[in-house]
Length: 286
Length: 213
Image (cartoon, rainbow over all chains, first blue to last red; front, side, top):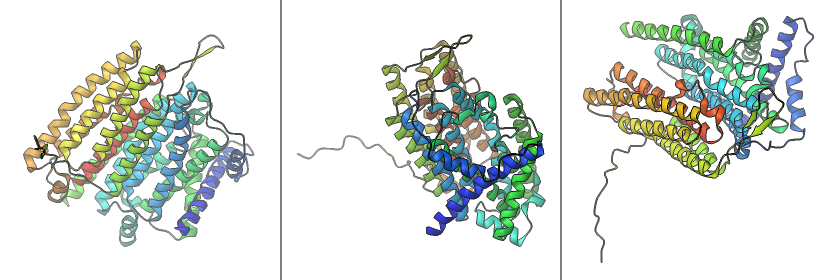
């Protein structure tokens, strides 16, 4: 257990560092100096010591509980990753994250957070490609265990080479949850900070930690499932490279309207569903 | 004097299905049931367009009590849906969730919200047809509705799986929620949030069932 706690602390700091790298890369592409890469770590520490209270308009228990739920969801997801557990469970935790976004937005009483929460539901189309990813991975490997998938890739070939659309789907999921991304309509600037506008001080620090864990888990799952188990130092380098690639997209792509976000995600969902059905039929015949 | 048992209700078909996955879903549903019990609703801020003014909406006590009852019942039905090992019970719980979701929305006395509740009601009613048809086709082709047995024997037709999926999408209503009249015009947390909790958990359980059978 002590190893997992140490891993958890590392994941929080590394996830925050990835967010810092994300901001720095976006800034440099846009010819701004940008903040130092450890800025998100400093932010989180700073928020931890700021004055914190609960808005008068909030559903008070829910307002606090949803932050703890966010931490719980991603700590559990990290544990599943740590133990090489089920990919289906990671999928479930990701879906539960949607409830967290929704609950955060609905609990404060603010119209800004509420619209962020509504957009979170609207962008539910983004989750279906993830389901197809899970199904395609199962069709190829015959297992949903993360350690089993890594073992299959060790014995055969990295899945990214034979299931590229599934890999793109998971990549889009990571992109859709990145800050300042083309699909980040739930925290668009016209809604201030969107669904988490009213969570400030200590609550914001805890949400920062949860989102850092989310980034760490999603990128790790992407690497393990589609590239296989790598040495730890190479794993971290690839994580940074994946984050930088996402930052490039975020820096060069304007934020889409909610309508276009849903439209693009739905089109990709249809495409990847057709791909999934074709793969299933082909592999069933073999 | 010894009391006689008047009637025995056969609950033999209430097979539990415990796995890491369903326990996580069950725990999540249980947390939100507890939150629905102990949380008070938010007080939404409404901006008066064209002015700097805003108003604060209070939820009347009788509305709060009714929505809380519906939300708790919906949470309990969700816990049943994610734990059951029987497809017929799953479809029953799914239909139950659909009705309770409408109850949460329809409690709000606002014409836009009631209009949305009416639309959701139509979707839920239509959703029951493919939902129970899927279960019927499964029992007709395999002779059982036990997920335990179907996981071993397989043989569930793809059309039955598709019908179950369509039925759950109808009952859960999540894809049809784009209008969101009940969120923008009524208190969201914690009662309306239960609609989304139940629909997502129902969908997640269905995914597991479809991959298992």
